[in-house]
Amino acid sequence: QKEVEQNSGPLSVPEGAIASLNCTYSDRVSQSFFWYRQYSGKSPELIMSIYSNGDKEDGRFTAQLNKASQYVSLLIRDSQPSDSATYLCAVSGSGGYNKLIFGAGTRLAVHP
Amino acid sequence: DGGITQSPKYLFRKEGQNVTLSCEQNLNHDAMYWYRQDPGQGLRLIYYSQIVNDFQKGDIAEGYSVSREKKESFPLTVTSAQKNPTAFYLCASSDPREGGSYEQYFGPGTRLTVT
Image (cartoon, rainbow over all chains, first blue to last red; front, side, top):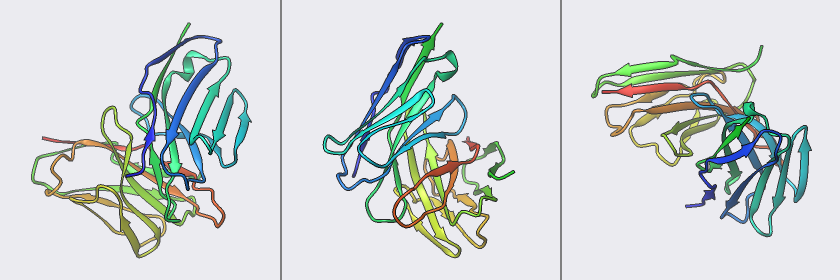
């Protein structure tokens, strides 16, 4: 079974700091990588997607991908209390049928 | 206003009863998915459908059934054969394109409690 691993946390950071969330995956053929944010009791919301090695920036969010190391990360700059949520890493599976494999998520707590 | 709707938001059933969860999308997406989420766990794929009148089992299909008679709709039935049906059920859709981009978008979810 292909896996996606995340540290469950909680990751606690002060307001204004950079939060760094990490994810490793086992399937070397994975091509698409996603970060979802999930507030307690709500459904996941797509916040970043990345397909190529390197960095991709969108506002306060930066996704980083290293396929050789099978590692993807999400940086949140100037963290706000409203960023407190669980962040799910998702990786495309092999087989060409649009399947995603999700990690269990990292809980982020941003304190004032 | 495009999106995915799921109903009901909360559902309570007695053990031994079948229950159907609704999922509708107006995003014109071809692919639709059902996931289950248990506390502290990631999403697990139950069923998925890439086109109308076709669907495939995911990783945990036992005790569940689906249909895909219309592009917009992908209802999930939780049968009495499902041993632990209490969970948060999430429907998603995507617009698969050649060359990648498997972005999936989720509905608000249905929280099912079976006692």
